[in-house]
Image (tube, rainbow, N blue to C red):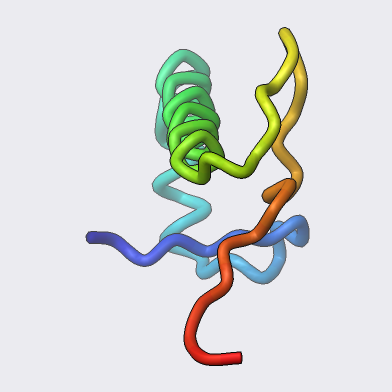
Length: 71
C-alpha cells in the first residue's frame, strides 16, 4: 500500500508527488477524489454507533469514536 499524506498545505508534499498528481487528467483527479470519499464513508459506516448521514452530508470525523487499546 502506498503512503498517503494528508495535508492542506501543498508545499509539504514531495516534488515527485506533485508531478505525479498534475500529470493526471482532470477526470483522473476527480476519480481519485471520489475514491477517497467513498473510502471515508465505508470507514464511517463501519462503526455502528455513528449516525446515518443525510444526503450531501460531509464526514469530518466519527460521531462516536471507537475506543482503542486500554483505558
